[in-house]
Image (cartoon, rainbow, N blue to C red; front, side, top):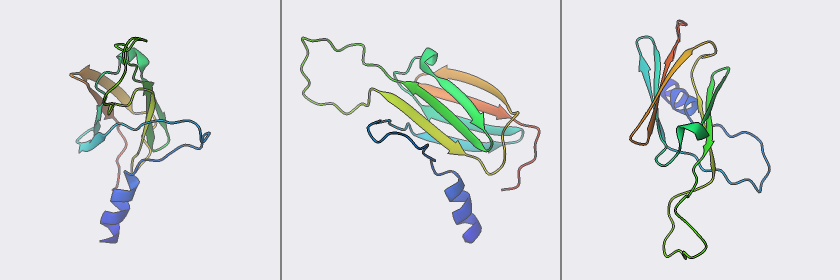
Length: 124
């Protein structure tokens, strides 16, 4: 049981230290182990691919960007607002280093698909 809890905790989001006034949202993500690496799916509806920054730091994958609300103007007043429009950050911790992994990305229907192809073996 302890191993399954450790495995779960490894995939918990990690936050970077920052100023308290910064409000970032964190998109949901799915992570899958594949034969040759990892598959990561991130729900980024309404985010332009040009607004994305993807980095690898040791065992962590960091996805940052901004979702902008382009339909609002000064003549609109809101009735209900549930969608976050601002900077976002998603940090995923893997059970082994992923530095040097080749990243293949695809963005379709609001989902960012990242394939991290890594020759390193990873013991979970």
